[in-house]
Each structure stands twice: as structure tokens, then as C-alpha cells.
Amino acid sequence: MTRPKPSELDGVESITRRVTVTPGMCSGGSLIYSQIGDWTWDAVTAACRTNVYAATNLAGQPVYLSFYYFHVRAEGAIHPHGLSFGDELDVTSRVFGVGSQSVLTLHRLSFAGRLSIDSPLDPAEFYESPEADCMYIANFNRWISRRHPGSNKGLIESAPPEFRHQHLTTLPSVYSPRLIARSARKEESFYPSGSPGFEPAESAYTMTYEVDVVRDINAARLVYFASFFSIADTALRGLWRQLGRSDTDFLRRRVLEHRICYFGNTEVGTILSVKVKLLRHSNISDYEIADITIRERHSGELLSVVGIRTLLEEPECKMARPATRQSGARS
Image 1 (cartoon, helix red, strand yellow):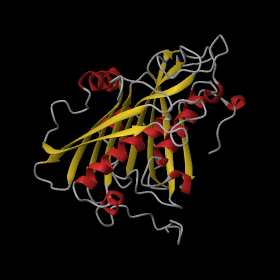
Image 2 (cartoon, one colour):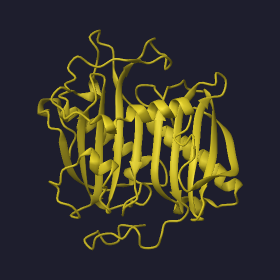
Image 3 (cartoon, helix red, strand yellow):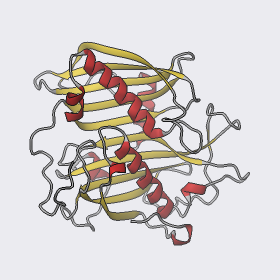
């Protein structure tokens, strides 16, 4: 599906695409999350009759549909780092209303032809009864603008005047991400009391990271949301190396769930402190949770909380593709 043009916006809540996975969409890092972010902006552009890519406030200043909570569930046939060149996917995206300044978009990814493309997507499927062959993503986005020109600090809520949300299906309050985000911010963790079946491990790791003008800054000169995925993974890889695991082990990992909340942005050159704590399953030796915080080292400001639920090694044949998959596509 091509990106919708402003003249084509029609308020449709749900979009289904058939896509071929390209090199720019798959890796052992953050490329897939970046692509999902683009799909979110496309879906909101179409659903809310708003050109997200060129939105401004009444004063003509740019406003941005920022990522506040990003939640991936991948316990089925597809997981974030298991895609490869030539895989064909059906991607369904549906936008829900959560107020005048925010929006939530659900995505469902399945191998092409596995599900009816007309199969509806609703929050109960995401949170309660996911299809076994699918990967799911929930994106909670808030409109923001700069309080001070040229500064990434103190960003404020600011929706464009043409943002249309009243016609959207309202997200049931039981599924609201606001309570999750509020708790993650207060507790500085998605797992403040642990997680059922998991126990704290002695292993922990802290690294410093300098926000890089080449890798981390987007066209709005904000730290790109997908860079936080890479920063968290870099810290997790450091912990793995500390435990004697190889980079090959890291590439073999299977991410079952990835959650991240964004509480602020920062400037180029800022030194971050990234801390990783580990939880291990009591009975399943290769099943772990990484509990990660990202903050400014100097000010101590909390920028992000990350939770990654992982199997240490992808099971053989778990990612079996449909027989129609292009031959020779994997390299």
C-alpha cells in the first residue's frame, strides 16, 4: 500500500496492506519498529483526515504525532527479529479514539494468506485472544510541539486543528494504556513487583551512551523513537556479553514481548545512563525478562522505561513460512 495523499483521506478506521519484507524493514535491531511507526502514521493520516507528515498548530508551528507507549506481542509464528527478505505479510492496522490529543493504533501482522484480510481487529484480540500465527503491536501516540524553539526539552501537548477523532471507535477504558504508562513512570519499571513465575537474577548492567547526531536524530531534530529500541538493545547485549554469551546468541534470541514508554526527549550529545536488570523464569532456563531504564546521566531525568520478554534461542522451525514464500530470498 502506498502512503495516502491528503486528497485521499476518507476517515477509514482500518487499513489492510499486503507487503513484501525488504532489507530496510528487517534486522536484529530496530528496523522493524521503524517500519511499524511509519504504518502507524499512515493509518492515523487516513483515519483522522489529518496529514500527519505535515501537521501544524494554529500558529503554523510543526506538531508531531509522538510515540508514548509501544507494545509488541510476538508469541505466535512471527517475531520482530525473525523476518527476512521476501517474506510476504498481511498487515491490518486499526485506529481507536482515546481523546482529543491522543490516538491508539493496533497492528496485526500475519504471513500472507494465513488469515482473511477482512478479519476484524479489535482490542480484545490483542489483549485477550491473539491469533497463534500473528504478531501484534499497540501504539499509543500523543500530539506534541516544542515549548521553546530549537529545544527538545519541555515538549507540550498540541494537536493540529484538523485532527478528527470523534468518529473513531472509542478504545474501551479497560484497555487504556494510560494506567500502564502512569505505573511504569511512577515505578520506573513494567515489573515493579516482579512477574509471575520469574525471579530476580543477580546479573545487572549499566552503560553510558551519548546521543549521536548521525544515528539518533530524526528530521524534526528530535531523538527518533526507534533509537530508544536500539539503545535498550545495546545495553541488553552488554549484559549478555557480561554473562559470557556471544553476539550470535543475541541474534538467535526470540523476543516474545517488547514494551517501551517514552517520558521525554533530549538533545544531541546528552549522556544517557542505561540500566538493565534481569528476571529469570523459575522453571524455564532460557526464558528471561529484561527490565531497563534510560535516563539523562547529569539531570537524572527518566526518559524511557523498557521491558523485553525473551527466549534465549529461537526454537527450530518455529518461524516456518508458507510454501508460497519466494525461493532464494533468504541470504
